[in-house]
Image (cartoon, rainbow, N blue to C red; front, side, top):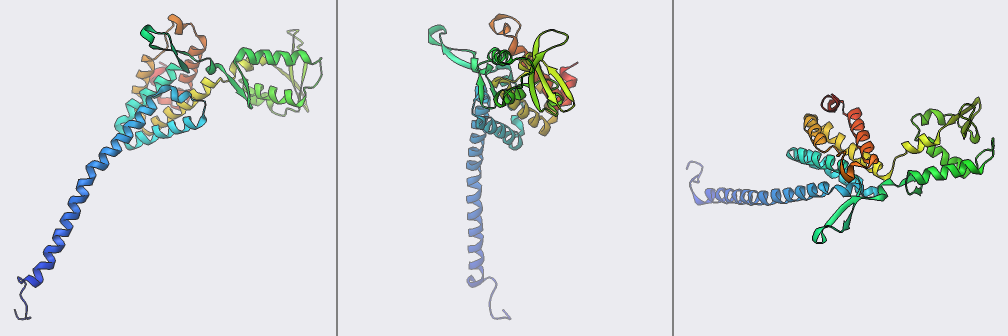
Length: 287
């Protein structure tokens, strides 16, 4: 009153009340949008989880599909840790199933899933071979076309170098390679390939290389193992759960599926790959 105005007057109180109403209205609007945003995010995460659980998507020949599924897996377990068990289970299930294709023929027209022959294909430098048998025959044809001590031409040399790269000691054997020739093995008395270096030569078994060459199925499973290892690196406490899921999905030795040696070999290779990259799994799986 000494200053000439009243604090209780409408001139002073009016603007204060107006600002309070504005802040309250804005706060209510933000709070009302939060549940909707949260629901949309959860729906998106659930959709990503269903996509990851579509196991055959991991075996899509398109390499972009591998990258997308791996990225979705990592994003999902990072944003929503509660999904880690389901994501891990989906990845292990994809490893266990292998590459399959759907065929009609079940009861009442039901779809039947069977091993996809495309999983046995081998891609070497853009050249595709139907399976290991086809690659083996191609290498044998090269062996027959050359006389002893005749160097391989450029095309055959490049192929045999790619084949040799899959030998367990491929890097060592390829070191210093200047050429390859066909010759007679001094001990086994059979024709074989030789790597020629400036300081000598060394034979190698192309059969061993072919048996160790990854198929399309194995290449896809490497992507799955990589995704699973990265998930476990983010959530290492899930190793025991993953080990339990692996044990429960171990391929059967009986029935039609049990007759496929390739499936069991791939499964064993995957377990060893996982244990080498995630030593914590060794305690649960290799005991």
